[in-house]
Length: 468
Ligand code: ADP
Ligand code: MG
Image 1: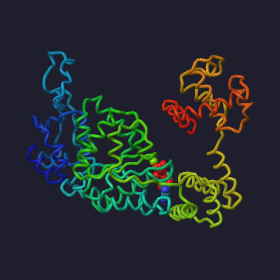
Image 2: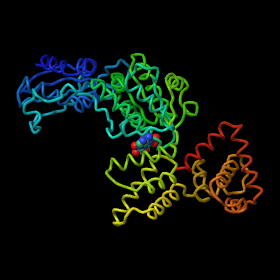
Image 3: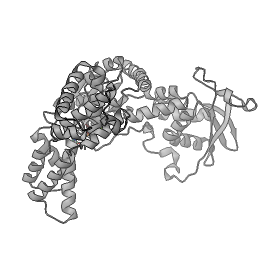
Image 4: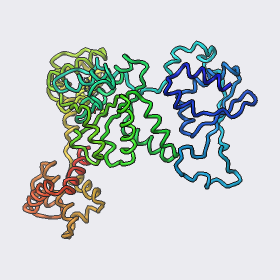
């Protein structure tokens, strides 16, 4: 029975997926119209359930009829040859190669699609969900000087994934400038042109989480295996991997495999590779193999065309002078630009007001104010002392202990940089010092951050914390 199922499955999915996910399965027994199959791990079982349940059902129903049942048996002995002493934790009376964790999956026929299992449309597309957002298309990604290089590199990659020298393609730039959008657009376009290719979009954060889970469940190899069968791997926000050596290692491994096999890798990051911190050198050097393309702040014309396109797609009409007013005043990034126009539309429809330049002014003002909200000196002191894990009172105290002095100087430096307060006022708020002390602190921080690497890291870390 299982042999016939396999034949059917083999004809309907990609050979590589078949090899990875079906060859390792063993049929164990058939009783009461229930077929038991043994799978190497829980991860494996979950993967099958998530991605291949349909084809499993179809093939089994074909063999055993509507009452067919499938029982997974998860093999607990370690199949990957590393010496995780799993059996030692199981009392010897229970010890066996096969654990009795059985997962019963009855096949109901609630799903109308399955009534006639042989004509499920598109069954050949039973593949990994790409996790792509179709709205993030090239069509919707307006071109301008700020993104021309990145956009055309993306188009080149999409027309020949793995076949250009842009491998990996690394898209970098500040928040809200379109990295995620462009990365999706490439994936969407590839799926369009090459439907048989397996494309996967995943954030570096989710990738890390999956990896940690896999390690916990002793499924590291399944995890690697899974990523190695992908044709186009898109990882968003790789700066998230900084400092995470385990995930970097596994990614390095996967990257090499994909690259050697001519598969395309697309990465995004909020920094250029040269500025990435706590990423292993060997990984950084891989990033530089392909092309790094920057997304910059869009200029006024591009901002206008982005807004017009958005309004057009949403079916909203707006006078040109208002669009231009918004585009002129919101320059920080595209996300804010879109946010402002959305709240403008919302305000006008909510209050049944016409969209006038006055309303636009009000909203833009609020937007600009909100995004550039000034941080308070209190907030700076709290952030700095949290960062060094000390109390504010310690930071303010008279002590001359080096690390406390440094923390205090950093707080003064940031207060000068980020608020409009005078030196004297900063001094009096941070531990009753005078203006000369604050001035000295600012100079010291400036000097130290250009000579002392560790100190520079403090400045960068705190800058990041304060800018959220
Ligand atoms: P990032 O990932 O760089 O933070 P996103 O890709 O999330 O930025 O983009 C933020 C928003 O701006 C999204 O809604 C995106 O569709 C839009 N956007 C960015 N660049 C463009 C562009 N060139 N044309 C149209 N929309 C854009
Ligand atoms: Mg993003």
